[in-house]
Image (cartoon, rainbow, N blue to C red; front, side, top):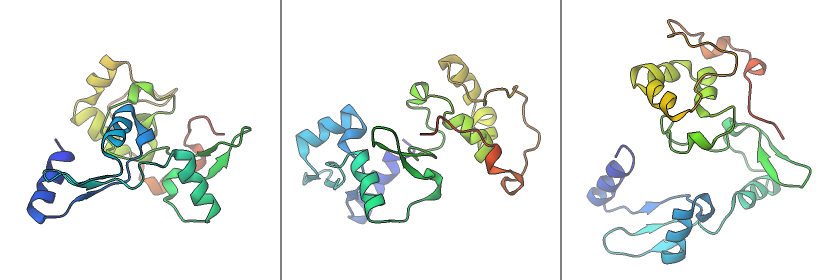
Length: 173
């Protein structure tokens, strides 16, 4: 409701169409839609273009490396593992910061644990003000970094006061 509804409303009112970077390899649902409609859907009710549908994550990372393209620093460095597969050392994906969809599948350090360090005020708002603490507790998703005891935050350091080397990350490749 927070993402798709306003977007569809905008497209309807403006006459513009959806142009997104979704990849079929992102999920079974996206793969199914790609196999049914292809990269471009010319339907009268919801026309859209998804030119990245045929790409896989490795294709994107290889293209960035091969062409020495700039990308957002939130992804960290692009490195290869022993098998030659490319990975980002920072965030793997970005999207709605609050969205818990798939959070139970993430290995530590998950999005909420990273948010604790990277965006503490946003973490406090999400966990305490929006009530995600109860939701994540019920779902078994850890929202505190390892070794941190829960205490309703009163004040967080400003991000400029942090030492990035002290922020724990998930397994680095």
